[in-house]
Image (tube, rainbow, N blue to C red; front, top):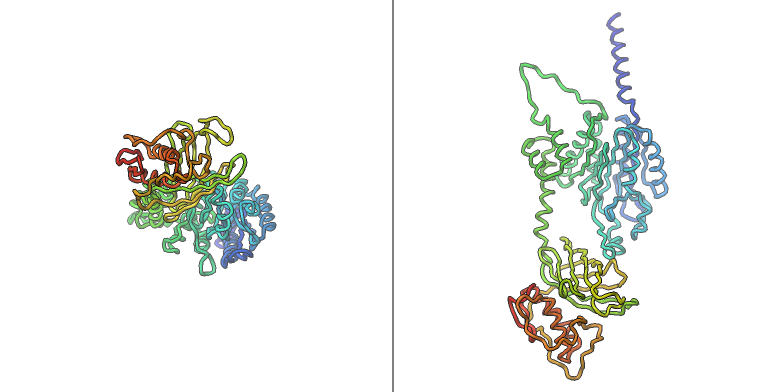
Length: 532
């Protein structure tokens, strides 16, 4: 009789310990949006949501599963979850569906969404607001975004707001900083897109379902999920994981450790791989990922370490390669009639070297001087800062020498480009063409006695402080290309000929000067004398 009695007590103790382990309150909201009405549908999110909800329930969560939510339903569901998270020990939010980033902010997309411009973004759900709701949980907060499919609204956004405001509409999602006590897991790296998958679940959700029930510290579980996605996709999809939870928490209990025989001690070469990988992820440097690969070449995170090394090494290589647009560009800018500004046409040369646009027009520090600065991205886009000093006869009657500043949003493709002024009240658009050949013959033409110089001609770029400065003279050592261009403009006026000379021949000669250091205009010959 004593043996059965002992067995009953053992079973009772095990049951009580199990109840104690699950005594914490765990809440979860799982959303799967796939039946989109205005953009391509997604096959897997509803399956993902149902399967993740069931897996979380097995791990002690009280999950709410919602699928194919329109904007009102999605807002209402998330508000109810925010209240549930207040008294929870653990709160988890899982989203599978379309999402997008705009100006560095991530948005989750309801199934009825229409996104034409930035105003429509207010109808979407901001991921950072959900992250803030999760912070109400006491011990652990988890945000999972299996939502890095390609942005279905990208083209429309770019057309309506991208270029005009200098805002970048990027692929994938932007990386968010995780507050202390938080885990953020993305299906793929920031700025990259992920697969919806060809089976029942997406590649990320498949790995999540395989490992969310594992025993072990929650950090290790999510690292194993990331490694599983990498292996399933054969390296094409690398999850992003942001860990700011530094304690120990076991969703399914601690792993069992088999006792080793003293006579035959065994050492696991991967025993410390998990801890070292957590440290490597927290630091995020190229050196620490290389160190992990050297120490643990055959362990679970070796492939992820290789991917991180490759990813971190790419930006430096890419920066060296962005020289496609190097050279001299002739910019033709047309400004609309908008009082107090009158309609105007300008033409000038811009210099790009090592992917950086930097040009000084006029004499630095003096009225009328303008400086252009900006970095050309690999896709040809750039935001150029234009700063200068007001010249004479300013339409706004500002004091000569007063500073001004605006920006240019440019997009270059091959040997042509376009741009628009931003952060200014003057509406101006621009066309650009790259100087591909040097033409010594492109010099100011012969004077035309039938046409007198017209100082008010809107096409002529005549610096006011240079007007009537006399006959041209040969350049001397150290003169800048932009200074010689102002002399060329004066020559065009003083020769009493072509009124369009200053806006056609002079910018081209200036461009050739910037490219080669040579000035081959009438009265301005010289090589190796001009500063580029």
